[in-house]
Image (cartoon, rainbow, N blue to C red; front, side, top):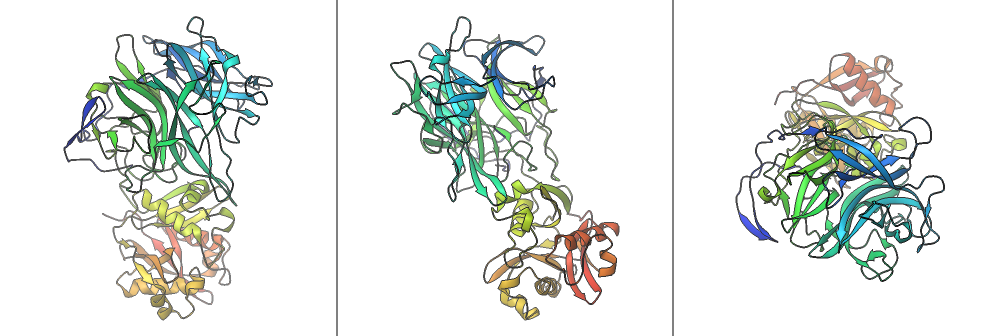
Length: 590
């Protein structure tokens, strides 16, 4: 179910945490990842691999319950045992561990609940007994509307699972406006100083008019206790623990050092030190495929204690070239010689205009060696920041991502509200998050995604102007109709009067008395005379329809593209059939 970016650190300091001394140390300038090795895994999308404690060749994996001869058919999963041949770098199937095919697997102690899907397992030795936790779903009161986490013991002899002792330990929590729902995804079981714990990825959901939106993802945790009947529960209860409770051990911080996405994948205690891997990102990064630079890049963090608020926030590895690719399920594993590796699924880097750093690997399921004893930690993730190499750039952005920037941004009304156009701020915020400091504008859209044009800061300013200044240029431009032809004219006039020959557009952000606009100089933009007759040949657009229709923005964009520009930024003024439009120049120099 699992789906920040800072400059290089140069300061040096030290601080004792847990079992060892941790140093602030600069990351090697995004050096290449050493000895990355692709592997072969049986099955479709079988990307979640977790080594069985005490072995080097056995791993927990997942396999689709197929509904046809197509190996990728079906949406339900089984937890399986796999064997890894370190010589051939190949996984092979050993046996099913939890296979909820057909009507699923009823739970004994939670008797009204049935598991119908099971996947993304991890395991730990708990006081001499091998325990597995895995993401689960199904029906019944113990299982929430979103993903839950289940637990069961595994025999060391034949690796069979005692289904009579299987139960839901953490249950997903429903969203009910205005509160968020939370999942209990990708559970991670481990022991620290003899005490068992479980962490889960708490994906937060909001239900909006435009559909479900993932607003945040943090890692939460609780201590576990084995009861007299041999069942595993969150300490202090003998029922499923709500996913929105427990300690948020890793999550977004007010200082911006930790982003809105911290999807924990693995926890290991190595040489007495707690180490957690995660996929990290910022607002809008909700899956490894989200079009955001650095989304779901691998982090390794440490803490001096397993529980407490944001105990992993302070320290992140910054002296090792970890793969920068979007990734899932980065987990530690030991080879037969005792050396540590990290296994994971590494995807193609997301291109939003910034060059991929040198620590990007060829996309594949694979692993690379690490030396945990040499890890050095700093307070800020030293991964590459977005830095677009050219501009402006046209990017396709899903509305699910734009809604994460502003929940009120809806595809159905993206351009239809002259009073409060929430998508304008969503687009600007998204563009800024990708290194385009001057924001951007929506050009095209359908029910699924929008095409946006993002601007770097070179030759494009984003001043905040008072509404009264705009009203002085056009008396009809007031706070109640900021997205009108009158305000489009006033904004363009303001920009030209302040030295920006290309006019401008906006607002991108606004309040009752001020608006943030974008102003382009003559290097970045050009004011082009045209007519409604001409631009309506590209898409429906008329004087009466401007600017409250998506088709007019599309018509201007396409007209500019046809003239060799990078795109358009709207009708700046119009009179009868005549109109002037803003066209953005290509390849604006730094």
